[in-house]
Length: 471
Image 1: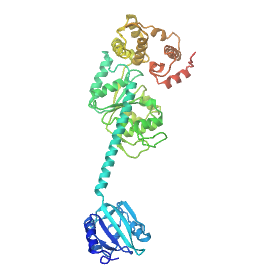
Image 2 (image 1 turned 90 degrees about the vertical axis):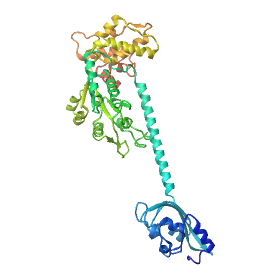
Image 3 (image 1 turned 120 degrees about the vertical axis):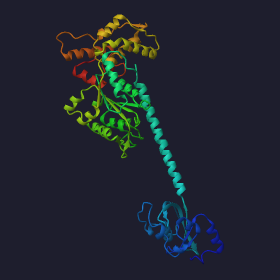
Image 4 (image 1 turned 180 degrees about the vertical axis):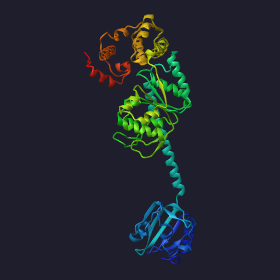
């Protein structure tokens, strides 16, 4: 087969007119026909390629530059077995050294039942590939936005379910006024804040007030209770995971760090982090980046970190339970939330604010508490702090039929210590009285653990140690 004897003039006119590139090959793989479209696309003229192996000129390498032996080329394979082939995943190289993606077919040419050569027809699919890339990128962006919306929706639902009671820091005591002054000082910085205080004092409320006063107020504040997850689950909760990272990970999920990007991340009960999780948290604070569980790509984040704990972190460092370097990273600006017994003068205002909220929540008029009840509230020790006050008022509000609440359970459920009692006996009596008031319910918003300001697991552990059993 040759350029002169294989193509009639009228056939050559037709082949020259088409927009696809066309090559004709003899059985040795040498070029015997090249149309103008092929010349335009490759930059190689027919005079340069006729009678030579075109593979060596523009099909010699893959797109990544790795060698492409001619025996692996589908065109040469068609020359051997006479089977047609169609390829869309390769490139042709131009004379100037650049390459372009092609779709090409290799079709055998038969004459009198004998294979005489191959015709290869190709076209430049750069625009098609670019369109496919743009579509993939758009789909990935849509998927990412969809994941973000799903994650944020899940987070918002959890937040709404978790938030009860008043949402403002109330009180005119010197302790509260000093706390508010410190909040205003640190709010417009990005410094890490460590909030310390007993259970039930309102550490998360302080964190949210700090966020509202900051320049990040228009972005989300994402909270996570480090004591509510096991060590393995906490890592996924904080950093997210890739699909298939572990059993049950059916889809990719963003963690709290990603959700808090440009906003604030609040880590409650940070002392409960495992040493391994502490190490990873330290890296995120230092480098502002992390990887999802099961992933290898680093994700950069811009967050303001607020941590809280009821533990003495310095003592836990001495006990080897908390990393010293992480402690100093978190303790940039420490805030202490005073216990309720340290600001008893705020109790009347707190009661009125809580009853106003409860009135809306329960749909019943609640005007206040009577004088004797207020005196009981003022003289009670409040081991569960503001949370215990909130839960007590809610229980009484549910039971009452009058706008003015008269307390009957506070002094009965929480008798003072008797002379000669040990600390364990006082603790056991208080826990048992609280359990009786809550009808021996431990967990949940109306349970004894919430009233005492303890995680349910901690309360069960204390009950076992103090030999407290339900009758």
